[in-house]
Length: 130
Image 1 (cartoon, rainbow, N blue to C red):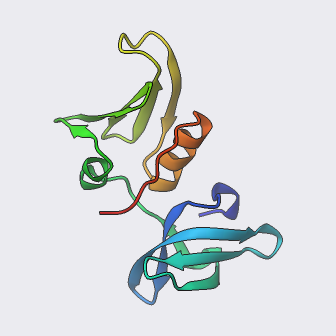
Image 2 (cartoon, rainbow, N blue to C red; image 1 turned 180 degrees about the horizontal axis):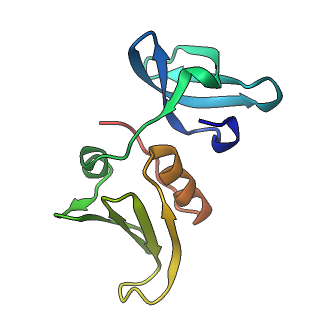
């Protein structure tokens, strides 16, 4: 991962030895490559980018945030938007049922990228891991 890919609020994994721990980014110091993270239990700590890795989007995560999952894609209704996530990692965000106006079509194979796509479209959703 590159520190330039991260934003405050992103979900990533911290590698504690061989054990990945899900964490949320709370602060980024780009010049020094230091990231402040928060664990689910509230514990905060600093680390460098080399100890972080992205979290893959999974069907169970999509179901956890309210998606209807099908064989090759998932569909999430979020207010006036709906999101189609195909299991190859691409997300399409639309603002009407007829798929006439696509807002975004991005490669979002990792949770932090999906969070960025939602943020770009001003979709207010908090993603948590199952």
